[in-house]
Image (cartoon, rainbow over all chains, first blue to last red):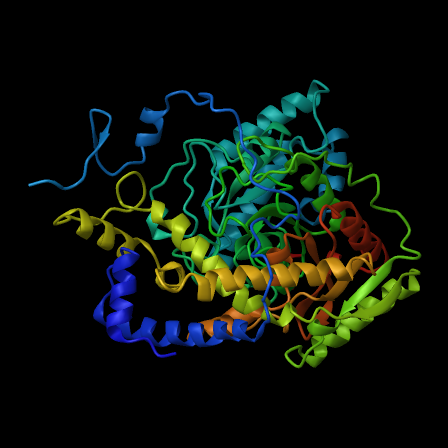
Length: 96
Length: 486
């Protein structure tokens, strides 16, 4: 499978990644090779097979009661934020 | 006997006998770390000051008779475990300035057990790599030959234990990231059953595959540490609520009658002839110990690498969506608008391999492709898991090589991602099926170590550690230390 430049640019946009021009070509080649490689999966007869939902047989996602279990850590957690004011994360203006 | 070549169990004895203090032990190893850094680059952050404080506390506890089996013993954590107040980079520029607000459960448990953290181990960026060459902080070098890679992604943990900078290190395994570097560095690397050890506070890569474990010089030390790490954690929704057996109690059980399956698919044309020789010699040791060997076939196993390179990138693209340049992590300079902020922060913060996997995952999950890739891979995964469970109805454990070859040269495989991905051809199956596995040293090819892999059914940690330990009582490969670090 050969991915085009446009396809790579579209994937990068969906993934919110800015690529340099030189990178586009690199990923065009390597992603094409990866999709060729994973196309080996087509060889497997999976008719009637249930896709795996949990690595341990018989187990599913555990649920818990819908109760407040966390206290307010916003000051501690926001210490890692690039830009904060009055407890809010700052980003460039979104609405004109 | 110098401190650095002793096992954890021997060090614990020395501490209790007041032969040396925890502070003396920490100082001795911190000095070894400092000396080794220019050559090996095994650590990203060294926490000397905190280490000496924890060691002082441990010494007080030991003096007061309050110490447990791990009190005062040094450890390093892979830099993917959050460590409160200490930087956690995950080997990425994205998290270069990230100070963990809390401890991962594994870190908290080992801290409560009295271990002394000496620092954070280098690793492939976001654990994506098999050679430790994708780290933003530079490649880790293999202590057996510094022209060679240590393996990855837990390359720093494996190199540090191999060079006896520390007796034990935490590590994580998504597709072989504990077992493969352990094999290439000649140490013991243990990956538990999925759900056995909490993933809370680990930076997530592929959540249905990630599992925390341990790298040590021998199985006995791995058992000591695993016993303290494992157990149910309400903070991890995939943590399994089943009691942790005392792995030390069963370590020495005789292996007579143990049914060992030799994975036919692992002795394939990709396996280096010299490596195969070492593996066959190790199997002969097991036979002498009374185990029974028979060949088993897992016909779908050859599809494990392609299945993995759909499932893991898909989960990675979803997990790494959290790095948005807004809440934590790298932010680009002067963003024009929100889209520019997202794209440039991520484009600058992530390295080449991480971007490759994020894009691969984005594509396989995108509209119109989900069934053909992700769903298909999850079905193949089910077939692989069924192969394993069929095999375990006939044999107790499976054995084979951990890797196709010994350590390869730095730079040798960086230009072709598929060649790099195929390093994990023997390890990925266990992750897809959620099984525990261990790699133990079983000889050398030239100057480079070879690893024997043992995989067992879910929650057979005790049996695997037992099989590894009894082998290590019969052999001395695990006691070999690279010549510059003896």
